[in-house]
Structures are given as structure tokens and as C-alpha cells.
Image (tube, rainbow, N blue to C red):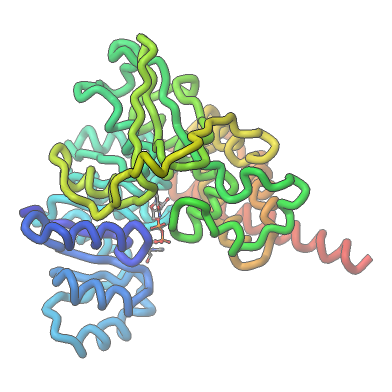
Length: 402
Ligand code: NAD
Ligand code: MG
């Protein structure tokens, strides 16, 4: 029996994780569930999973959460605040941590799990994008096992040789990593129509059902850009080792090409319960609830190259990855602010890339040799992006009034 803390339990990945856990009560026991502010869903999940702790990260919700939980027949303790997230991620009783908080908020709790030497199921790609080298060093130092949840990285992990050594492609007989992406909902929309895109249209992904931030990132392909950076850190790759391939059907989740011409692909229906079940049980296999592929229904596997003009965020992320840690941290923060502004109706869809680009251009190279430096860099990029958004809106108002 393994004890698990699910960080971000009320999100899309968190809900899928609970679904898989509940199929295997003999294998997993839930130690903690965390949410930012959705007390009602957290309560339903707690009634189902009987955790020892629940954490409501937003301290303003603590009183209400305590009251609501005390009205139900539950023995779990209700905690609040960001220290509590780190506490349940690193507690000695915990074997596995699902890191599924969205965005930079996931960095410190995920790192706490890494530093406590846990088996970390990494969905929160942003933490690796922000702190890459420091994150990998901490995992090595503290003997943490990082298992990728992102479907592409989980697919790559499954297609690599079992004895693959970090960064050693050539001696493993590998020539390339093929990172696939669907291209999102605007793959074939006329470019001239993209500035009209609404948040709901951007969040309507053709194949995957995800949280709103990652859905917008999929539409701009910033998600693939973050995944490009994530893949470099997870497997020790150079930029030239990775090729991004558009595969709109989302059945192949990524591939590894070998020197002899073989290409190994991992396939499955687009449902995150597959990588979650794989990582939970690794190296065993358990049932996930995902329907098997029906090859009589599959047709038209297609593959194309992403157009640079349609996906400027993908190009920005690749450039940031070459520029270094300060640039990927800056881009990640700018993008979070810009996506949030887009979801709030403050900027247009195409302005997300504009904010990201301006923020990167206005940030000079600096060294990030500690988590404090990463957080400082993240904060200043957020302030800068908010100013850029303020200026964009001001010049827009001036144009309207003149
Ligand atoms: P989501 O928005 O559906 O859920 C996010 C979770 O994080 C929620 O439980 C929320 O309460 C919590 N949270 C948000 N802000 C917080 C804060 N400030 N402090 C503490 N908790 C906070 O997101 P999601 O789609 O489940 O994605 C989660 C992570 O997994 C992201 O990093 C995303 O990139 C990654 N991921 C998601 C998918 C997917 O299919 N959804 C696929 C691959 C990777
Ligand atoms: Mg992915």
C-alpha cells in the first residue's frame, strides 16, 4: 500500500488521478488532497478518498473550509496556506506525490516533494521550465524519482530503452525525439481570423479536456514550447535532438527514433488517466479506465510541421530555451499573466504572444543560481508583463478615442 498526496486534486489532472486511485484501493491510500479554493469539490473528494489531510491553499477560504468540513463525518485535518502544501508534499508517511497544481504556484510544493526524495508524478511542467537545472540537481541529490505525467513525456519515457542514461542519446542508439502536438483548435483557421478568438473558443480543444490555462497554451502552442523545454530537462536533451511534429488526431503521444531507422511510438486514446496510471504503477501496469484503441475506427493519421507564423509562442519558447534559465522563467511568468489577461477579456488572443515577446525583449540576461533568484525573476517578469498589458490597453483606448 502506497500513500499519496495529490496536489491540485480539484483540477483536471487531480480529478483524473482520483478516478484512477479509486479503481485500486488495495494499492493506494490517499494521505492528502489539496485545492486552491474549490472547497465544495474538495469535500466531495475527501468523502470519497478519506485522506488524513486536506489543504485549502487560499488562506481567505480557511474559516469557511473548516466550517464546511466539520459539518460532515470526516476525520481529516483541514490545513491552509502554502506551507501546508509543502508539508503534505514532504511528510515522511508519503510515498508518492502527484504534482498537479497549475502554473508557478506549483514550484515550491513540487520542489518540497523532490527534496524529500519522493516518487514525484510531474504534471506541473511550469516548475521544471522555471527551475530546470536546480530541479534536476535536487532530484539527483535527494534521490527523488521523477515520472512524467505530461502525455508526450510519458510517451517518450515509455519508448526509451529501460537503461537509458540521462542525456546519452547516441550511446542508447537514439537519433531523435519526436514531440507530437495536435496544433490546437486553430490548426486550420485562417490567420486573419485569429484576433477574433474568444476564451471559450480557445479552451475548446478538439481532443483533450483540460484546465483553462493549459487549453489556451495548447491553442497558442505555448504548451508545446513549455513541453520542448520540459523534455530537455527531463531527458537531458539538446534543442537539436527534438523535432516538433503536428499530429492532429492525438493518438500518437510522442515517438523516439533510433539510429537503425526504427521509430517507437506510444499510442492510446487522448485521456490523461493512461499516463497517470502508468506513472502510479511504474514499473507495473494497472487498469486506468481508458477505453482501448479501436483500430477499426482509426483513420487518417497525419503529420505536418508547425507553421512559425501561426504559432509565434512555440518559436519564442524554443528561443528562450537556448537563451537560458532566466529566459524560460521570464517567458513562463509573462505567459501566465498574458493568458490570465486573455481569459479575463483584457487582451486579445494574438496579444498573448506580443506580451510574451516584449517581456523577453525587455529582460536582460541574468544568472539564476538559487530558487530565491528564480522567484525574484518570476516576480519581476509578472510586474513587467502587467505594465506591458497596461500600455497595450492604453494605446488601444487612445486609438478608439482619436
Ligand atoms: P486545472 O486548472 O484544471 O487545475 C489546477 C489545480 O491547481 C486545481 O486543483 C487548483 O485548485 C490548483 N491551484 C491553482 N492555483 C493554485 C494556487 N495558487 N495554489 C495552490 N493550488 C492552486 O489545471 P490542470 O489542467 O489540471 O493542469 C495542472 C497541471 O498539469 C498544469 O501544470 C498543466 O500544465 C499540467 N498538465 C495538464 C494536462 C491536462 O490534461 N489537464 C496535461 C498535461 C499537463
Ligand atoms: Mg502534454
